[in-house]
Image (cartoon, rainbow, N blue to C red; front, side, top):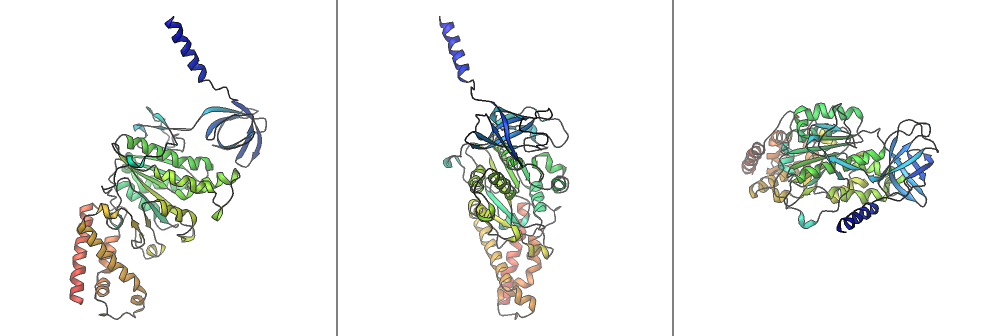
Length: 450
């Protein structure tokens, strides 16, 4: 009797798991990259397979909207060959991200398919791309610096393990070069890089020239180039973040680089407008600003696990630091690094404007001596910048301001502290030794000038 009861319970359990919803429908509309289907009972985010009526390649699409009896789909590839007779078959599942150690050293697309002409990674498990928010009490305090190997960053805008920071830059000011330096020299166990909306040539150039073979060994690269559908460009951000979360759960300290979060926002704007969302400032839809904070909050350091330090690049349109995405990102990140076109025009690389850049966790990451030294250097540099027009015009009278007199004399040494070629790697002790020496020279010069 007990055997029959156990068998009955097993059958009932299996029947409860059977999906009796409608799983097959037909396309009812094809407009650009948005497809409408009828006859389906699916969930938002679920995947479907579209089979052309006359045969051909099956196209994967994602459910991006639900409208009474219509299901809105965005395909993962070209829609050539589709017709209103095409069959749509629901998979009954949303996209999940394959994760595991074998991803290291690989270059993959937004769905983790290889781009490097190597066999598919083995031994992977799958994780959902969307996760529950992290309990704030499960986060670890951020007190350990993440040394990037870039002097200007480590001294003036220090990063901590688990911090989230933005690199705000226009075009042509050395953003990719700076990211390459951080990728090569950062003291992280694993580096996960999401290249979103980049030109195909730039993806290859970044891997070959900025990252290099050594940097690739401990990296995972997720690339969704500019020609990819918006749904895949958006997906690349979630894939990279999920992979970083898996390595964090293994106790690793991960550096997550996302280039760029602006193109993630543009992809979501394209999806939102295509599905009928209203336009807001500069055409951005409400969903863009609803998705950004949860994505950023997935980075951080967790109790009993490792950490994810997030570096997100923000493309400032027309060098406008107050455009909607840039303004929103400044509010939700733990700091920002500003790359300046005027600094770059002087041949100063990396073109970091240290006076307009800030790390909100700098106080917890520096010693009291380091705080004093950096404050003195910032003050001196600020004094020089306030008077730079007078100095360049020759209208400044030497002797009127002892600090400025000394700063003019030491300006080449300040520039040397802030400049660095991509081939140079500076350890933290070496960088702080340079700061100490410059601070001492500055103090002596002010006393002498006074």
